[in-house]
Image (cartoon, rainbow over all chains, first blue to last red; front, top):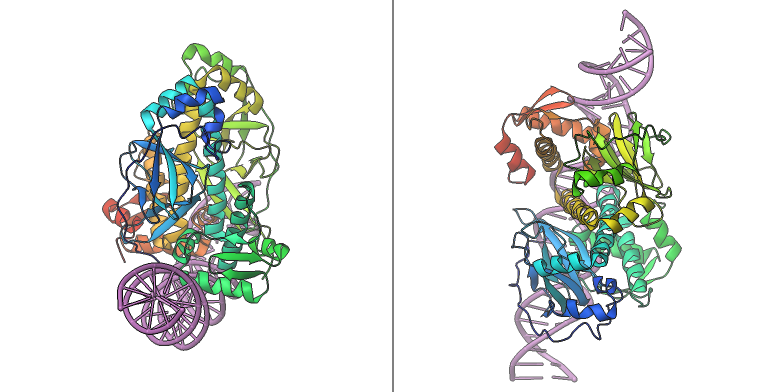
Length: 245
Length: 245
DNA sequence: CGTATACTTGAATTGAGTCAATAAGTGTGG
DNA sequence: CCACACTTATTGACTCAATTCAAGTATACG
């Protein structure tokens, strides 16, 4: 179990005209607006860049900003007083973070890889919602998608065995890559074993042993530690749903 | 672990003018509308009553309706092919169910107690959102609240010990009761041990033993099996956050 | 008031965790 | 490009919290 130390949050960078040639616009909240309305979004956005392990914000910080991921991968996590950590999600380009309708963030967000974000001051974003209900609808659809992911994850954490958890995780990453227009098969794992363990409610040792087991059974093959090839997708699916002993 | 059999879903009852003297209106999505706009909601709502264990809908059913709980308690759950079940939430009066922006429900919803629901055909509800963005905003705030609960639950399922899980559960029920204007102290447990186990990712035996342990340590007292008095709230809080061995 | 169901308790088992050692990457400067 | 230091991942041996299997005991209901 990790009891990690942290980097300090980073501050903003440029704020010129990022939306124009943003290549995740179609997937992000921004897609709710017509091209000519994008200027309004542009007016309130700043771009932020973070390096691996830097924090976007910490649980409990005043929730001044909301963010949209444009490049890289982020992780959301919560901690117990003694340092036990649970990662509640990994965010990819197009994902939104900072829904919370509270004064403070309910979780910590950190960069897993080099991370590029669009940053919106929440009061201004809320004002835009008033002008463009389409934006709010898109937010709602994002939130309910995340809710569904969260429910899947609760099933995983509450009821699945280690092998089932890891298989499910690999499949979700693979599907996610495909949705982002990347190859579904050699699965890229941008996060380290500690992050995987803290996401799956396991220890790094169990994650490692379980990888070895799946490799030994011929279900997957490790291209490198951070790149996994699926040798038998059917088997991986069966393992994920607990249809194998 | 439960491998429960199920009752069939129930159908609608009356549809006269339920909103007028609804005592959860202030807490439900309906509060987004001014009194004179309530008629529009009334026009599309039907009341549904279910008995304990009856299903509101099953995972995979076409998602035709959304619901608002007006009386009683419901449970949401997901199952693995071999019958392992995870309850992802308990819903109380004022809670909304059926966000999913998909064609099918992503989970099963069942009555824990006698259950009274307001039922909305989703297309008509969506049409109302167009007319009243306030409604959609309220939905978004409901969804992000649920998301926060889900994240807490992931921390619980992934990282907490049995004793910490049960203590957290009791505290949340207590806080929830208080928010609904009921006494926070003798905590009412409308669900049975199997439901608690499937919510906390444990077995009924572990739940039972853990209750006994908390009682024996003088943290709580069992008034009946379904009613728990808190003897030492500080201790219960400490246990919930893992600050006790 | 008896019977079914729900809950509790006990004993034995086990899957995942902990502790510990090794191996494989990653990066840096000579 | 290699040698060293450091971090990350794997593997092994042992432990333990929670599960499983198995009685028992309450509780609720017709």
